[in-house]
Length: 230
Ligand code: ADP
Ligand code: ADP
Image (tube, rainbow, N blue to C red):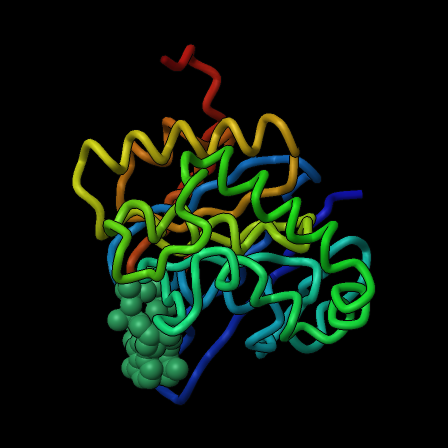
């Protein structure tokens, strides 16, 4: 069975029509998929359906065999803006989800040292060793984005949701972070859903690229990426 399954899913926010219209798809565990399409085509809405932040108006969304109802705990998320808390150090920002998400809170209290070790390891993997005690304003935009990816991975999510995480970065930093993300994914094999405007980014990173059409939010094309990558 697929890890994420959409069966004829539609979502209408209001009477202006469907933001997502009859989307059916299946994402395997460990797959890296990307959704590309113009602004307003329903990419964020798709993300919110996957993570249970929105419920479908019709159809069903299942993750790991279960219907999604309410915010999904097994996913990590990163967005265009890193949203790091300015009064927390890099390390404490990365640990934040463990303090907030209920099923992880008690584990974190009991095994703080272990999680701190994992946070340091993640930070080192993305090239932020030595910055653990710095504050977000002491980091560049690219470094903040790296930290936000570590924060998304701290509870070892099986599903990583990325909404335009590199859009605000310069081209050089962006491509550097593509490689960082691919290395993390190759090592850990979580499932990734990436939303992006950047077709080149989608083709560089993903196994499968879904192209969405503007309105109503439909999938125009599903393409396996099987050509060799740099
Ligand atoms: P992006 O194109 O980067 O996804 P948007 O500007 O489309 O960003 O959306 C930003 C946020 O505002 C999203 O959470 C989206 O759900 C919400 N949003 C977008 N359009 C509307 C709208 N017409 N009414 C209310 N919220 C909206
Ligand atoms: P994208 O992420 O691709 O930019 P969105 O999923 O944000 O697209 O939006 C898809 C459509 O749904 C757009 O027409 C947007 O204006 C509308 N929309 C998004 N969020 C809301 C909302 N909370 N309320 C009403 N309309 C919304």
